[in-house]
Amino acid sequence: MKLLVAMSSFLIVLALIAPTRWASAAKLRIGYSAITATMTPLWNAHEKGFFAKYGFEAELIYLAGGSGIALALEADSIQLAQINLNAGIEARLAGGSVTIVGSV
Image (cartoon, rainbow, N blue to C red; front, side):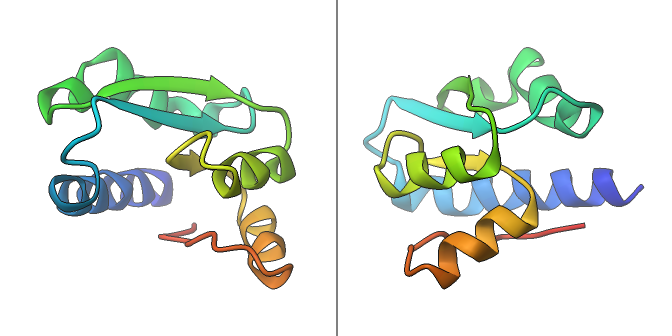
């Protein structure tokens, strides 16, 4: 249930910020750091076409480990990520500009 709430929150935030932040972007690159059941909502959203429904050409990119995802966010190689909370906090404490939207 908590995972469903977290993923729903993620998609709502995406829908709210998308028109202003990525209005000119044709492609949205989303990173994920593990091949586990916790990534299922992200994969389902991609497979069911939810990103395309809102005008995004989403590309899911696997990068092993949360630190790799945090580096990719800082380098602007990806625009969104689904990672563990610790990696986001560590990146922020190290001076990065990672924004944590939600956690379960």
